[in-house]
Image 1 (cartoon, rainbow, N blue to C red):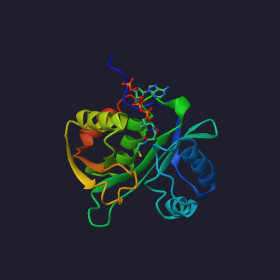
Image 2: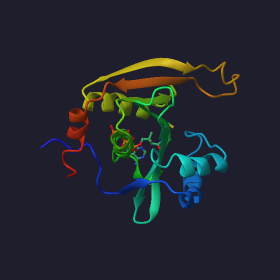
Image 3: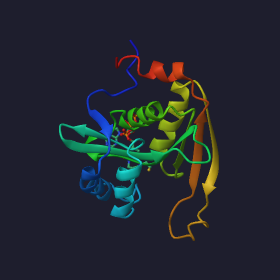
Image 4: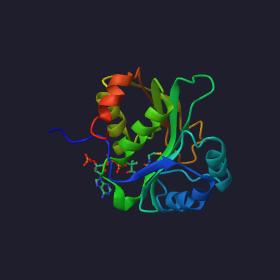
Length: 177
Ligand SMILES: CC(C)(COP(=O)(O)OP(=O)(O)OC[C@H]1O[C@@H](n2cnc3c(N)ncnc32)[C@H](O)[C@@H]1OP(=O)(O)O)[C@@H](O)C(=O)NCCC(=O)NCCS
């Protein structure tokens, strides 16, 4: 029997404004690999983008957070902005689980996310998602170091996965229903 793709050990739900305090702490604890933006940004995500942003919980503790949205100029695409899994919960397939959930929730035909060249784990997981969805992953540089005024921020490489069919997506969730 092949290993299940979706981790069903934890509760996954949409974010709320009340979650922001804990999400912010999760992001601080996992710096520098994930950018920390103002609390106000996360309040806005919780207020206006809760249909596309989720958390994973162990009991009532938030152990992972993934944000994203449907870009207005390509509403068939789910764009993942930040994703973080708390250190003690890594290696359990939560990154793939959260991203596949967000693709399912949004009904997106394409997935987009960016990776820094040093983030080998995210790169591997993005290509694994494309493989699971039996589709391709195309990459190009979205923002260069110069765009960040050489402040130490690595370039951001956009990975666009798709087209995603409902059958291929459903197959990833086959052991969960
Ligand atoms: C990138 C990240 C989201 C991956 O999450 P994840 O759910 O742990 O991903 P996976 O379960 O697929 O594990 C990936 C790899 O982590 C490593 N890993 C395994 N156990 C681990 C542990 N206890 N602690 C740290 N890394 C571990 C392994 O190399 C594993 O690969 P393998 O499954 O082939 O052995 C997570 O590492 C993270 O939050 N990193 C910091 C923030 C970040 O880089 N976010 C992405 C850019 S915004």
